[in-house]
Amino acid sequence: LMGHRVRVMPYSTFRLNLSVTSPYNADFDGDEMNLHVPQSEETRAEVKELCLVPLNIVSPQKNGPLMGIVQDSLAGAYKLCRRDVFLTKEQIMNCMLWVPNWDGVIPQPAIYKPRPRWTGKQLISMVIPKEVSLFNGTDSGENAPLKDEGLLIQAGQLMYGLLTKKNIGAAAGGIVHISYNELGPEGAMAFLNGVQQVVTYWLLNNGHSIGIGDTIPDAATIAKVQVHIDEEKAEVARLTAMATANELEALPGMNVRATFENKVSMALNQARDKAGTTTQKSLKDSNNAVTMASSGSKGSSINISQMTALVGQQIVEGKRIPFGFKYRTLPHFTKDDYSPEARGFVENSYLRGLTPSEFFFHAMAGREG
Image (cartoon, rainbow, N blue to C red; front, side, top):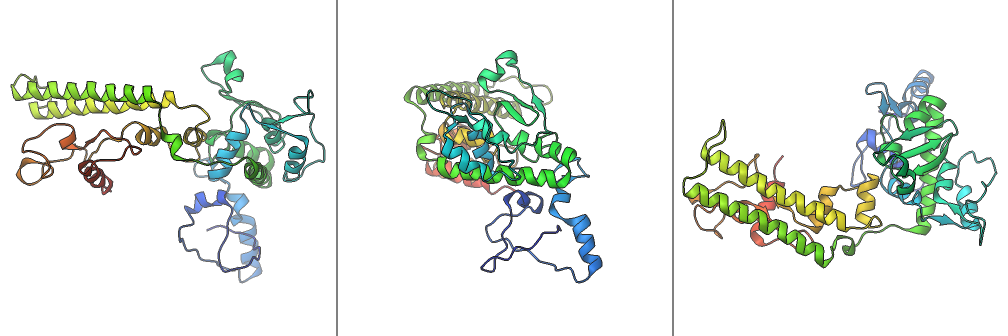
């Protein structure tokens, strides 16, 4: 339960700021909420002093923020901070109007000749409070500014780095947390509102979209992925032959069957990981799926490798797909078939599409929980 100030708008739907959906665990797919109107002056005072949204930005329970920048604004802030983002005088003036408590001063452009240009980092710095200084180091050391790795904010100016979920999301020690500690609830709220307004306006002109092209690896990568899969399938065939000939040595604390399953699972997981790493390396930084995963707005590296490389082994109750009736997983396979494909290894990516049996195993794993 939190206190909100009413803003009367047309139609009968609650509309709320996206950053407040996290503590409510709310989304816009048909969720219902209850509105309780304070009935007395005492109740009004309590809601105002204890329950208002800004007062609950940082939780005393976990000593960290419950709210941060999410979704479009998060991906947009990440894109805006990139080194190749420049704004014209017209653009910067339009964006300035969205900065809350703007002092009316346009900063000096980063580039004067041949035409004045402002960087995206300069624009986002307009919203970061002067009281915020933050440093996140990386392994790159002195090269960090050139690669935009890590993050340095000095007195509200973003010097280098890209804003991600770790910095402007609901993360302890991030900008939202520092703003709350230094400037109180109002300051943290101003930062959240400012970032959303400025970034959303910039994104309106810049755009962000994801298409099937973002999941298509180049021919060389596809070939490498197939090599990884074939290598590990050969390893599984070798293990199967050893187990059949009774030559497999049991690992400590396991019988031969458990040892076989363990080694097969390791081989197939290795195929997934190697193929995933190969495709990750082949995708450019400007790839829209990579942008979303890196900024923390949606998706992860696992999602990307399943879309581009292979979906991998399907697990039911912590094991490979079990035999059902008559020692086989599906009528499409012979009895006692321990091969990867018969036990739920999906070697296709979502892009290529799954075979009927792969699809069925994937649906089985998806029913868990």
